Image (cartoon, rainbow, N blue to C red; front, side):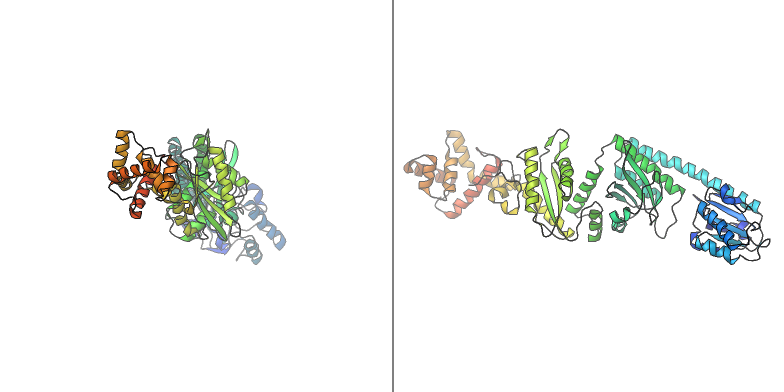
Length: 537
């Protein structure tokens, strides 16, 4: 056993022979017994440190109820594990004043109907305690070696938290100073209910200087530091129906917190950004088992969902960076200053995901426009900000994020100077740009325009430009001839050459439409003078 409780002691044969009966503090029998102390002193508290199981015959107990209450108060104040009274010498039965005082202080009171040898009790219990302490030391060495190995190989913070959860069998949460749950891990299947109303519950549990129980829910809390300053804390939540927090869990959480502190010194410290990226990716691919789990995980990072409009944004930056400043880092620093609530993180190597939570009555366009202008001004005009439709349910975010990704795929470099793009900005050139790597599109362009491009290459002519102007003019030969600076007769001659090469009738609206698509696709593919970008015809 990792530690000995009052209940464990009562089951020992040496105590069971005394026919023990719990007279008070029945719900406190899980207290840890650190030592056994035999005393007949009227004021033993001055010799105790807490955690002792006090054995007495009751001989020194005062007859005055007020003094007897003071005796119990002194034991409870020092934190003893329980009081064992042997009947027969002073008492024939436990006095009601003693029972009442112990009940009021929630102090376990055990009455022995038969006499036992206290020396045998102390020897037996102390031997078990020493064995448990030895086992705890051996266990501590194993745990220390595990976290050391994780530290030496540069493990991610998720691995440290998962190891703590596996070793304790309890949910473990790593949170930052503003009570955002950065990482949550359980020993078994994920339990979304762990994070229910997380920031509010977390604020009720103060942070001790070292691992200790804290707050109304009895959480085990250990501080995590970063270069001598408090960064956050590691929290273990005991199971409601499981055993109480003991020395082993405390030791494990301390080791994990120490390993995380070292990891912040030696590894990448952007744990908050990693947490945001993880949740954004889980939303993008909907990896949650339920809407409740998604809501709790998102709200645990400080993003309100209920009663808000959620606006997904995808920023394609092509790996743009200025020194150590990335688009993700820039947004993570600037958005809180402006009062915008959002999750921001990397969703791919060249893309940043942004999930805005705005009041339903407020307009999202000014916020996104401000973000877009700031990013384009900081990182250049080549950056693309794509916005999916706003939604009111977290379960709808996945579809909206996918639409934002499709918009970002369609917007290429050299587009109109806009701070952001939405689905209505996608026309034929943008659609073709998004399909530029599709072999079918490339084959279509070659089938429609291949002979014309080859003719221009062999003869140094520019029939493709003539065709483009003709299509832009919607088949109006006079306007097209004027644009290219040719006489109508010369322009007509070029059109007849184009018809001969392509085998198409340019008077046919269907044929012009086919060629219109082919020329637009050729432009976005960057061939024959194209610009590798969407170009309006």
